[in-house]
Each structure stands twice: as structure tokens, then as C-alpha cells.
Image (tube, rainbow, N blue to C red; front, top):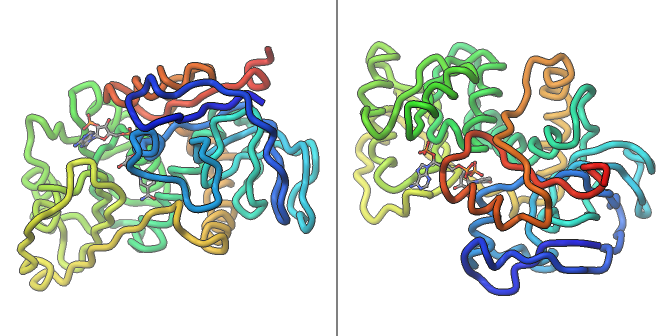
Length: 331
Ligand SMILES: NC(=O)c1ccc[n+]([C@@H]2O[C@H](COP(=O)([O-])OP(=O)(O)OC[C@H]3O[C@@H](n4cnc5c(N)ncnc54)[C@H](OP(=O)(O)O)[C@@H]3O)[C@@H](O)[C@H]2O)c1
């Protein structure tokens, strides 16, 4: 099969098409003929040598795929050959075939093509696990979503709105601010020209945000503490703005804040399956009813994964970037 390899850490240009054996099926796994594979920022980190795949996982990058089931391992009960699925995978998505644990796969929602379906797993699993399971976001609360036009941010805006929260989003340009509003955000803040602390406090009448979804870290941490409401929950999903050397924790005490975070890839098989079953129960019906659709920035052929990474690193994209295979394009 055609796949994309990372022969050495480096810039987008190190991603090269290679021919690899079709991966073998293990117990409880399905083999997927991949039509589309989502691109995520952790893939960029992996390419740079900063986010290695877990021990035993494929070195081929890619955390999510959509396509059809062409093989089932012993013990598989949820899917049969021929069914169309999207799946979360620990690696191996940038390829024409990919294996996934059956518990981490979901049927492609009715009315969805492979490209839209491939854009779901990584961000929807991450947002669900962090914002709803860990952050306990409730209807009527206010959530502040940083990086509102990122893959994670667009999924967070969509899901938080769908479950009845008021959404404040930050983004890095006027066009991105408009995109956040079009996705349903109640307020969008241009973080280059506006202070998100002041704007969030003004929006909430001085109360602050009940939940903050942060992919930035760095100097945002102390500002998040100022933008949070009493009993606020701050969810650290990424550290794109760097780590924190020193931090005044007094606001955490006085506001009784909870600051938590997690990475999806390192979670157990059972954890990921639990997230999948909650998504299937609570979110899939909304997708199938046409109430939620992931925002797609654009697609690239699998062979041109390097161009897809360059697009992501330019920061110009809004929403998800997706790779398509020959099977997906009908070649
Ligand atoms: N914890 C988990 O399980 C998990 C899972 C998936 C992803 N992540 C993390 O979530 C983050 C977003 O991933 P993604 O795939 O959604 O990314 P993405 O689509 O590439 O979006 C990244 C966006 O973040 C904004 N940004 C804010 N501060 C930035 C900075 N200092 N440097 C560069 N960009 C900055 C930029 O938008 P503006 O121009 O609008 O500022 C940029 O376009 C990454 O840190 C990723 O590692 C975590």
C-alpha cells in the first residue's frame, strides 16, 4: 500500500510517499480501506520528532481515518466487511489501509462523505473527553475556546453550542474572528488586537468563563485564571505558546479553580472506547440530524501530505485539513 513516512525529523518536506505492507489485523481490530485521513497538529509535532508514537504503534503518522471495513480480526462484533466507518487510531492513518480497534470506530454518520467523517474522530474525541467529561460543561454556562479556528477549536465551538453553552472564542485575524461567529460563537475576540480577559469578563458581566478550553498555555495560563469564573474549570489541551516557568496560584485558591488536561493518544483502549460510545449515543444523532458539521479547510491527495502540513503550519487554515486516497477520490 501507499503510505507516508517520516524518515527523519524535520520540516514538512521530510514527509515522503513509501510502499509498505498492509498492516496485519490483531484481535478486536478492523482493517479499513482508507478513503480520507485527517491531519492534526500532533502529526506536525510527531514529524518534528517531538511527539513519538506510543511503543508498538506504527511509525506512519495519522490519528484518524474514514473508509470501509475490508477485514475483521478475531473477536470483532461491532462491524462487518463492507460497512463504512471512521476511526480514531494511535498512528498509521496516512496510508491506503489502516487498522483500528473496533471500539474506537464509529459508523460514518448518514449524509456524511468520507472527508467530513475523517475530520471527526481526533477533535471530537478530544473535545468530548476534556470539555464534557473532565470539564463538566453544562447548558447555560459560558465557555471560552482559545484557537477557535483550529481543528480542536472549531469542534469545540460546534459541540459547546450544540449542548447549550454560550461560546466566546479567540482567533488570530479578523477573517478568523468572522469564521468563529459563523460557526456559532456568541462572541469572537481577535487576540492580536483585543484582550481576551477584558472581553470575556465584559461578556459575562464580570463573572468570567465557567470553562476555558486552552491549546496555548504559556502566558495564557495566568490570563485564563483572570478570565475564569469562581469554580471555573480550565482544560489544557495543548501548549502551542510554550510551557510555564513560574505561576501565581493565588487565583486558583481564591476562585476555587480546577486546572486539568489530558492527551488522547496515551489513554487506555477502554477509555477511548468509553469516549466513542458516549459520542455515538449523544453526538452522532446530532450529526445525522444535520445539526452539526465539521468545518473543512481543504483536502490534499495523500501523496501531497507535505503540502497539507505546510498549510497547517502557515496558520492560515480554518478548520480541518484532510488527506484523500485514490479510493476516496475514485481514482
Ligand atoms: N490533548 C489532546 O488530546 C490533543 C488532541 C489533539 C490536539 N491537541 C493539541 O491541540 C492543539 C491544536 O491542534 P489542532 O490540530 O486543532 O491545530 P491547528 O488546527 O493547527 O490550529 C492551531 C491554531 O492555533 C492558534 N495558535 C494559538 N497560539 C498559537 C501559537 N503560539 N503558535 C501557533 N498557533 C497558535 C493558531 O490560530 P490563530 O491564528 O487563530 O491564533 C493556529 O492556527 C495543538 O497544540 C495539539 O497538539 C491535543
